[in-house]
Amino acid sequence: MPKSLVTGAAGFIGSHMVDLLLKEGHEVIGLDNLSRGNISNLEEAKKNSNFSFIEKDICEPFDNNSQLDNLDYIFHFAGIGDIVPSIDSPSPYILNNVYGTSNILELARSSECLKRFVYAASSSCYGDEPETPTNESSTINPQYPYALSKYLGEEEVLHWGKVYNLPVSSVRIFNAYGPRSRTNKAYGAVIGVFIKQHLEEKPLTIVGDGNQKRDFIYVTDVANAFLSVALNGSDNEIYNVGANEPITINHLADLIGGERNHIPDRPGEPRCTWADNKKLKALGWNPQVSFDDGIAIILENKNFWKDAPLWDEESIKAETKNWFKYLKKD
Image (cartoon, rainbow, N blue to C red; front, side, top):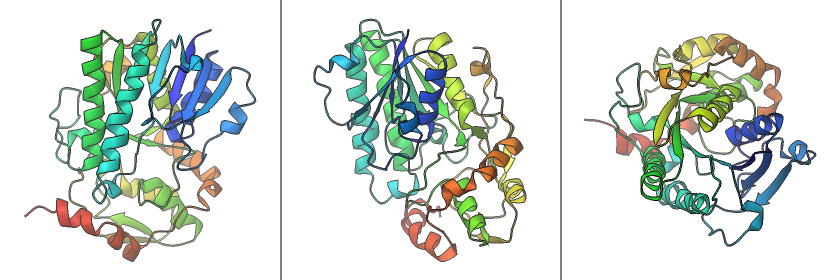
């Protein structure tokens, strides 16, 4: 039975990774500091005898925890994922997403039977004017601290792979969405914002003209991509995970329905994210959930977002004040 560690196991993608690994017959250790609450199905996972959980911060050293001996796979999702607040408070992002990653890499070094360390990187490293479709060799141009911190984490992973001969790979995630996405107080991913507005029968706050495109990828397809890389990926390789099918924000709004309120364009964000995913497909992976079907599943489970913060034009303006201050171009 393969033994796998999932960091960030109580989070959005990490919890789906736990589900998939248990389904595939792995012994799974979930690790999370629960600082943002348990938004996943960990209680259900704990009913499985092949699952165990460690409540721990990745910024703390790992001192001789026998439970973490002899790991076959490490899937590293833990860190801070909120984008807009990184402008106001960059230091925690560097601490968690860079220093915390080095702690997990050092843990990997102690696992003599490690087959693969897979890092959850971000497509935000490509910046606000990426060539499209964007492949793994495209220009790196982080626009804000979150993007920088995730890219530095990736550089660490590849460096540990080269220096210490660790079997590492990195997966740059495009616009992941699906059940269990975060509902915390930070202004964030568009789908969660829209669903809460839909529940409250408020207008959907569309940034700009709504014709900007995002390469949305359903969360279970992301988890399957990580497993494909773990089983079939190459050392020190980077893989894009996206659907290779950019969707306009206006189409998303059409699927959700309701009134719309257009708010100012945000600097530092691309008009289009579009993953060239040929490298990942060469491993045998293909996305299974279409965007329309994925949004239908979310709408069936929309009450998950009932306690999420409700955003409107004024609260978004206040939340993104410094974003405009620092990222606005002349």
